[in-house]
Length: 106
Image 1 (cartoon, rainbow, N blue to C red):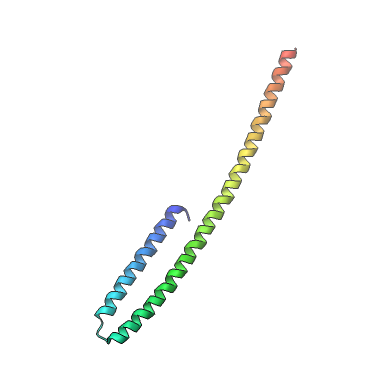
Image 2 (image 1 turned 180 degrees about the horizontal axis):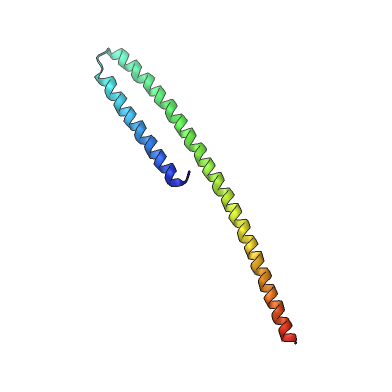
C-alpha cells in the first residue's frame, strides 16, 4: 500500500467513524427513553469508540512501520546498486586510462 492508498484508506476510516458518531449520538438523543438509560448507552458507546480508535491507531502504527521498513529495504537495495554501478564505472575509467597510457608509450 503506497502513501496515496494509505491516506485514502485513513480518510475513509475517519469519515466512517465521524458518520457513526453523529448517527449514534442523534439516535441516542432522539430515542424515547430515560435520561439514566441514555447516559449509560452513551458511556457504553464512548467506551466502544475509545477501544475502536485505539485499535485503528494500532493498525495505522503497524502499517506505518511496515511502510518504513519497506522504504528502508528499498533504500538499501538502491544504495547497493549505486555502489556497484560506481565500481563498474570506476573500473571502466581505469581501463580507458590504462589503454591511453599504453597508446602513449608506443
